[in-house]
Image 1 (spheres, rainbow, N blue to C red):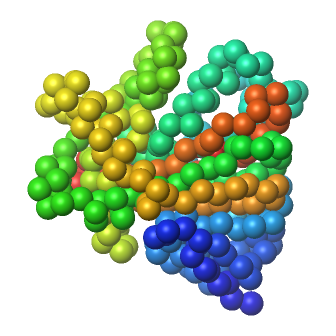
Image 2: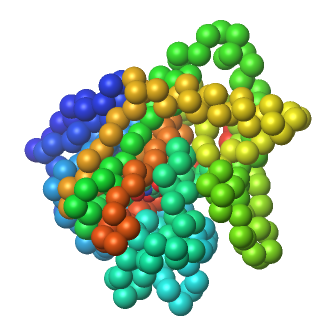
Image 3: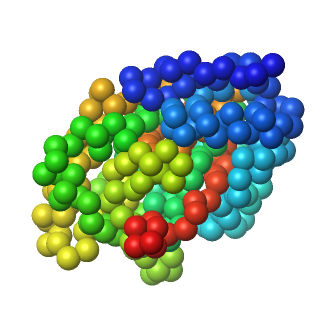
Length: 294
Ligand code: OGA
Ligand code: MN
């Protein structure tokens, strides 16, 4: 059976039917998923209930995995999932929710700001693949914003202004916005800023996107307050309701998004409840600045 996709968001985001992701992905289905991603930028697969091995097989069938390089504040001794997973849950390795003031929880609250995954790495992420293993009784939705539609809606003067800008991205910048500043020297070094273009062109479709994230905290050559207020205005523009789709999770849902064309954010939920979300990530083609120069 061939898969079908129907749009669920305002200008993007599709829900996929007619595919069972627990079985190995045929090359035909993989091509259909990529084509769907190019068009919709976010694909929702309801009721898939993948285990870790199945999620990893699906991920590898779609591309090259991003090596998990210690992006969180979890110590090696409290790793809960295989190393190739990003643990987006609020759980310690004994499956207990973090205490409300746990540093690992407070750092992870950074996911509630609009962002694009791994924009703080020299080669940022392509797709993120997020699997809901348990969900809270309320809240905990994920929202997505279409950065192609956001770019298209800029006037010509603004398109010209953003065309060649380079930003610096760091997890320190995003956490600063939340008043989380108690990084160790080792963490500051690990989270040193990297450069990204503010505009990206999709390699297959040629569509242009704004490339924004709460991790973007500076524009090369600009005074800091001017850069920050400019970026804040752009994020505000890009996340207007007409560009946003909200996903309400059910256990077993799997959502794939293209970080090159979208931003996303997690929404709050009761701190004492478990929310077990497991992410695998495909690596991008290379640094965005090299792609812009090419
Ligand atoms: C992520 C992420 C949002 C959420 O997995 O990268 O930001 O709702 N998740 O958990
Ligand atoms: Mn994320």
